[in-house]
Image 1 (cartoon, rainbow over the protein chains, first blue to last red):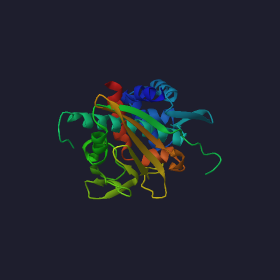
Image 2 (tube, rainbow over the protein chains, first blue to last red):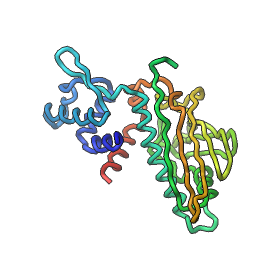
Image 3 (tube, rainbow over the protein chains, first blue to last red):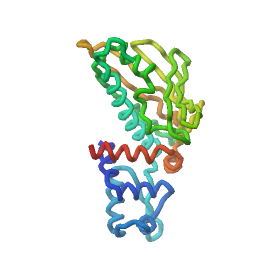
Image 4 (cartoon, rainbow over the protein chains, first blue to last red):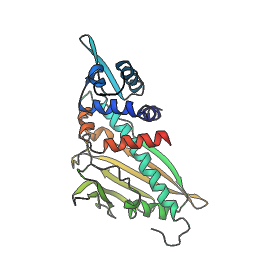
Length: 106
Length: 156
């Protein structure tokens, strides 16, 4: 379950911060670590988890590695929509069943 | 569509609710605003009201707190309490785009014991257009909120 992995990966606040920094474009580990209250190796570890969750990908750039949000755009978007519909439909079910005993609902 | 385009698989979900098909259909449509998530908005300001107008051609839109209407799509098939098909016209960059055609279908079937089985499908996702993901994510003002939702789901 890629979604479950993504949820777990993003549950960590620091990891989420690292992920959000990538929204502005590809970054190297050193750039991502700047301003964060954790060490560079810790950031690398967070990136590894994000990569395994399918949220980011990396590529070599000279002597360093550059990380970016997973370039499979539609896959990412589909995952977003899939999660969105889970949330929406759960709210819908709750609303449908909320006034279940009501004779003249909605 | 370019040869490199990968059409994403349809999103399909099946749910069972403790209510009649009539009620389920009514809550989905007439009661749209009662349950539509507030975390999802493609506008610049928070969503105030979500509207799904009844009947074929009925508009599906969000009204922001600033009074701006974001048209999400419209009703393609209106067959209460059995079937509903909606056009979803929001592109890969999370912008309203009348040229985008994806479809959301719901089928409501009486499952006995006062329950309804609902089959949900969001298809033709290949029509969302070219996704420049980092751009799409950057442009989506709802993304940070969705991340918070990921968090609450993960921590629940």
